[in-house]
Length: 146
Length: 198
Image 1: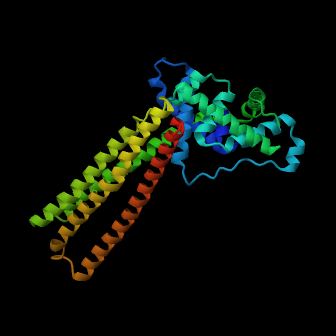
Image 2: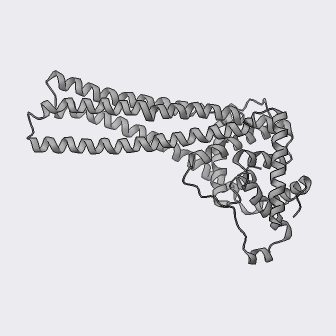
Image 3: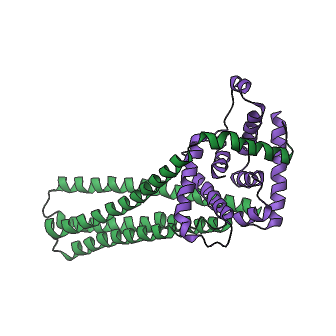
């Protein structure tokens, strides 16, 4: 869950995603005593992961050069159709803004809207509007990739 | 390319199974996270220790190497040591404040707390540090009349010039720190605007 969120956030860059997931685990450890069981572990870890992702971009500003991972024609021949679709999805997610990227990854992870709104701190109504817009953008980006 | 949401979820799930779990050593990441935590703590402590050592060094220097006798010099020493002490206290407060940004809160709440923290950091790096630098410099130049009783004018000019160079370097680092805080503040504002759909 954490690794895939980090990978998607870092547009498929494995090394950066590993670095970011380390930060997330570090934040989890630091926050362990603050867990009050008012929310599920999943919500709690998602909150930490989302906040750490947003913080990571701020802290590493100017030091990060994240580009969407491009796939060579040679690699395309070797890779399975599913992998190619997955890479295309990563690239499309990578084109979204940081906040939208995090929201759509939770949607793809089949988290329900109440959990996502609890993680982001916004109302479910606001979230639904946002998700509708993000899905539309994602769909357009994927169609342009065809 | 499939783009129906259910299909995308399926692709996402298959990607999770194929690439994430098999390729990335999670145990290694957890152990590196522990090392990183120690390293981050070490950096914060090292900065504080350096500041405290400078303060102690200056105290010992003014007490045993150059015990000033004129009132003007004594006031200068007090200004220098006082401003450095204030900087140390604020650095400690800043570390405490950074710990209060709760990453287990909602993104909106955590961002708002981070905004307050970076606003405080900007205030410290900006107004406070510049004021401290000015007070420290005034204090330093208040020492020069008594210094000049023991050193010739060439040495005095060299002392003053080296101080100005050091002040310039500190000034540049203040500027870069303020820019960093400003960039963080702008990012937080952007994230919050996105979250609230403004």
